[in-house]
Image 1: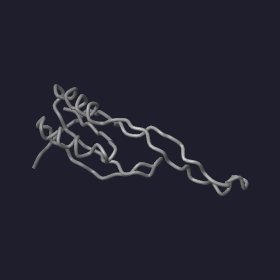
Image 2: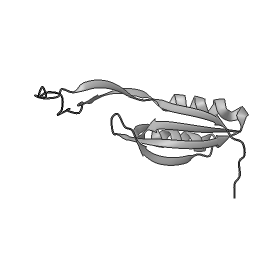
Image 3: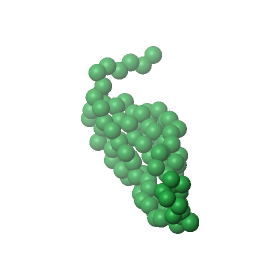
Length: 109
């Protein structure tokens, strides 16, 4: 049995959750936030049999889309005074970060 931890952008959360339900995959949803863009994420915790791990990974990869968005970098006031104005930069967001771990024991009460 494996524990899959998948961190996805909030924009993909409902589609991914629906895809899990359709595939009869049980997942626990946690609201989280990212450090770099300070944007909302959702972390899914999924305990799944070894033979279904690839099914879960395929669903996550299909649903979690990368996209580009503009962000204004934070101004560092300690940088010596050259902070006349920050210009937006384009960054790639989305997709998914996924960790897979072995589970020593699993219980449902």
